[in-house]
Image 1 (cartoon, one colour):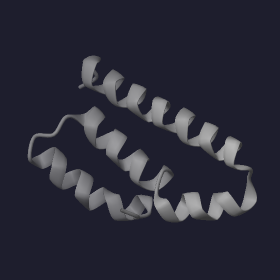
Image 2 (cartoon, one colour; image 1 turned 90 degrees about the vertical axis):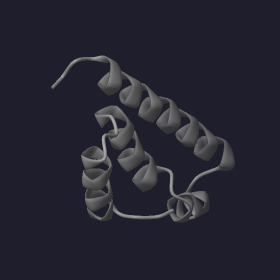
Image 3 (cartoon, helix red, strand yellow; image 1 turned 180 degrees about the vertical axis):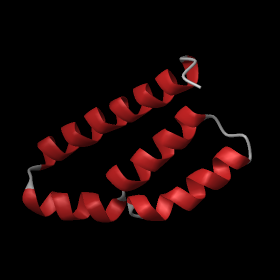
Image 4 (tube, rainbow, N blue to C red; image 1 turned 120 degrees about the horizontal axis):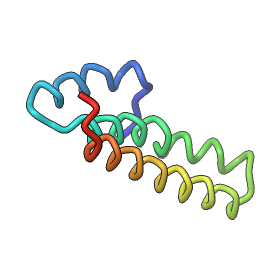
Amino acid sequence: MYADIFGTIPVAEALLAKGALLGTVLAFMMAVTTLSLPSLVMLRKAVKPRLLALFVAICAIGIITVGYLFNVLPIF
């Protein structure tokens, strides 16, 4: 799924209204914009495959970590 950050805001609002946790919604928003297939195809033309794999791994770990932290920590 590809969407820019502004396209995910209505989806995020709907998920929050339906009771989804904030960390889950934030992780969804970050993953959709960062790890989308069109973005990765464009990056593949600019960087080496090993660097692209490292980028995907670091982003995925960071997104998952942020999602868990926002779900665990009592922010609101």
